[in-house]
Structure formats: C-alpha cells, structure tokens
Length: 387
Image (cartoon, rainbow, N blue to C red; front, side, top):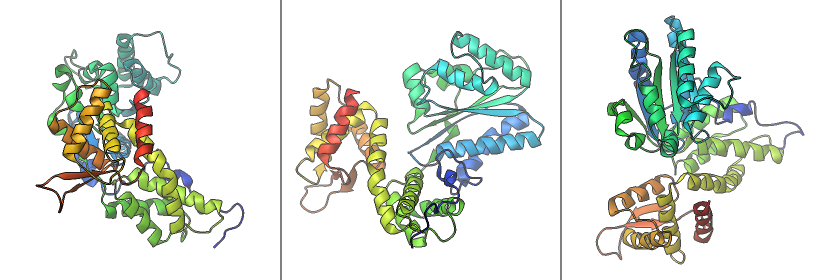
C-alpha cells in the first residue's frame, strides 16, 4: 500500500488544473452544438454573432467557451478564414481600459499599459484586425462584474464595432459569461444588440455526470489502478450536493496529494474525506466572497436566526433579514426577490431548504445551515461586508 519515496499516484497533475481544457467536454454536447450553430454565420456569411452563457459555479461555462474557441478556430482555418479569439476574466479586469489592454496584448504583447484613451485603443484594435484580415471572438468571463463596475459602453462598442462599414467582413463577435442574467444589467442601447434567444443555459451536473467527469480526469491525470471505483463514487456523491465539477476535480486532486504525503500507492476513501475537510472552508469562503451585498445580508440574517436551532421558516428569515438591512442601512428587497436569493443560496450549497412537515401550520420552506457553524459563518460574512 505504501509507495517508495519520490513515487506518486499522479501521471500528469496538469490535467487537474482548472485552466486545462480536455479535448472532449463530457455532458455538454447540447450547449456546444448550440454555440456552433449560432456562430456558423461568421464563417458562412461574414456576420458577427453574440451569445450569453449562464449557469452556476462549476457548470462548465468557461471550459466550454475555451474548447469552443479552439475548435471553431480550427474549423475556420479549414475553410481558409482567419479567426482569432481573446479570453478576458472580468473579475480580474474590471475596467474598460484593462479589458482592452488584455485584448490588445493578444496582438502586441509589448503594448504599453498606459497613455491611450479608450477611443484610441479601440482604433488600434481596429487596425490590428484590418491588418490581419481576421475576425475576433471576444470572451468576457464574469461579465457582470465589468458591467457593474464600468457600465455597458465597452460591450456596446464591441457589438457596434463595424456599423460604420458600408461593405466588408465583420470584425468582432462576443461571448458573455456570467452566473447572473447579465442581459438585465445592460443599458437599453447595449441590450438592443443582443438577441435574448442567444442565451445558452448550463444546469448543475448530476451525480452520474460528475462521476463521468471524474473518470475522465482519473484516466488523464493518474497512473492506472491508483484510484478505485469506490473512491470515484465517493467523490461524485460529495460533489453532487452542489453539482459543481470544479469542486469534484479539486477533491480528486487534493485526495491524490494526501495519498502522496503518506506515501500510499493508491487513493483511498479516507484521503477523500480528508480532502473534503481541507477544501470545504476554502470553497465556502470563495462562494461567500462572490455573493452580492443583499445575499450576504440574507445569509447573515439566517446565521443569526439559527444560532440555537436547526431550522427557521422563510417568514422568520424574512423578519431577521429586515433587521439586518436596517442595521446596515440598506433598503430590504421584497418577498419575490428575497425568495429568489434564498433559492440561489440553496443552489450554491450555502444553506439547506426543504418543505415543512408535521408540526407546522400550512406549507412553508424550512431553512438550515448544514455544513458550517453559524458563529463562524456570521464572522466571515461581517468581515466580507466590512471589506
């Protein structure tokens, strides 16, 4: 069971990186076909296209956009058409200038990071595209962060990039990625350039789909017979609570590292359990940080309401939420929006929600916090709100 010093269960650890994109994305065929169908007009008719990918964390949006761009560029080259792509993470680049700098660096890695206005950078981009006679697909990941910080102007400029041309090929197409409905954040002028039918939705992965993803990564990243089927079953069961492939892959990677640490020649269920214990706090903090203010306030209200009990009704939570909003001088959301936020927190796995049973008058939803002490959660949220 113990391996030699220097031995490892990993054949290629890079295959477990979040940046790695498999040649084949399993269980996302429908979304890939839809994206190819939408964007074929670029190759067939020289027409720009826009699309919006939406879904929860770890549902494959970013990975699919990368795989699509690689494969679509290959298809374009087979048709003797020039096509390039640029991917921008808008959580890291929240201003129009920083987004444009990232795109321009694709064409000129030495492009200076200051000294040019937005208008000048757009014109420089235009010259690059004209010189290369190419079409550019721009992928804006977590686009909602950019829009909230800097507005819709840049997206509008990209979507209307060729409107002054009388003839000729189109230059830019857009793919926006977000957990939220980013179309609702766009101003009317930018929204007018997007077709609401060009929305591609990504649901949570099922337990069996997560098992398939884990099987694929085990084959790519581990030596044969180092990860047994019951270990893959356990990882799939744990991750299925959230339907999050990133969490599943991270569990697999961490479990493998723990096996190496104790010099085992295979990954065991005990290492999976150890991996979950280490990862959970990190995953939770990341999800908490991504919440908007009112979801943080709602979660704070739930944590306080559940200090000395297992469950609270939605009515009780709503009252506590009102008190917290008053404390932080925020106007509380109405019942419909509050219920939507409860559902989102449940999808993220930060709370539990189930229908009431005996002992409750009428039908209501019972809210719980199953995986983290309420006092710890309260401290983390207050800290994030202060930041």
